[in-house]
Image (cartoon, rainbow, N blue to C red; front, side):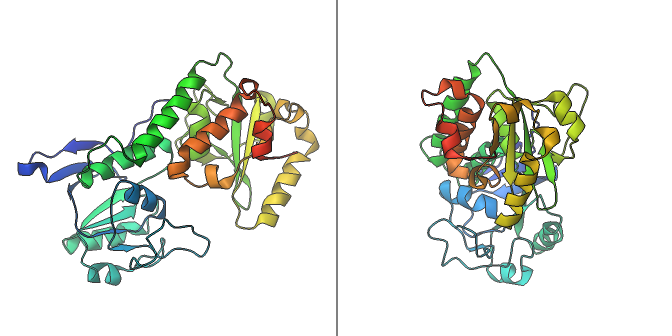
Length: 316
């Protein structure tokens, strides 16, 4: 799978290599000082990665009530929610570096304001495991840390082992991932987190039709196209905030008479994926997500063929 990743890190040749040049999420180059003393992070998905790379924080976003935070973050000053960071609080904390999201336009004006105040700002975008690898490598360079024996390297070794194991499979099952956003099911392209994992293990996303180009993470799908391409596996991700709404959406999907003839439904390969591994970025649990996906794609490899069904909750 070829992906042009936005974070192309190039050495910036200055004495003592104190700065690097980064192409950010918006395709713009910016210079970042290494080993910042005071960093503020306003992008929840990157918090654990920064800390796993050995970083500390002078400030962070205000978490939601349901958000699970890494240990040691309780006493870190909060600078406002992910969608509405407070510029006044951020400036008052006197940061050397502020890390913002390149996935929401709301952060762009804040970053412009901080840069005018002389504060280095970095926009990042985190879609899938390939981004995790690039971002953890970038954070290690910013922190002046030697890569080799840390958490990101351990994760990379485990995931690489799983991918190498799947590379030897002769049959490459077709699949479709559908995420329920509370209003409708949207089909995931290989840019999206869950589909990236299944494709990197040898699965063939039915959205990857010849001559079809989809650059977004999710797209519309039609029942007619699903029936025509009839994938070996269908994976559903319940992403609505209400569990009851999720259950009802899945019930209607599974009980749709028009879909009962699908191969995935007839063979028991329609699965509901656990959101903690496939809706949200699992970070240090990426190996768990890859192992889970491996069992669903290649159930015949398992001595206990019921393992995959026992770990998830089947959709039917």
